[in-house]
Image 1 (tube, one colour):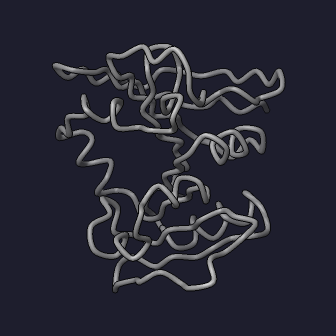
Image 2: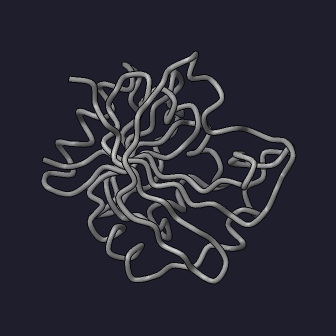
Length: 183
């Protein structure tokens, strides 16, 4: 069965964007490598929140140049009036009935491939619902001092992790963790 992996890049002090909501400074250090390329090739579906989806100024651009050309499931309370452009690989489904539904639909679409979850709010919902199998955290070499924290609203939730692997590039470190589920 497909794994569900929450993947995010964050600053050393735990922010996924700066005080203005910009993520550009974090991605300035991103260097794709063989392991990242393999993980991306094994992605069969992506789940993201509406805020992450709206980062693109042109929603139709997902079909043309988004790094994951797979089905996208956008968790939202308000689907757009006009459905964005799709292609033979990338479809967009707006899910209004919760994280469990979004993950179920994404797993079905991904078949044997993995599901990648992007976004702070959706990531927090995923962790609270105990639906994450892995975390992939890239640490950018910057301290932002403010912005949106990935693990801000977990309401005292304690999650045990087991380190699977570490990837070190010239500019950043990525750590992959298995989420240990309570039996």
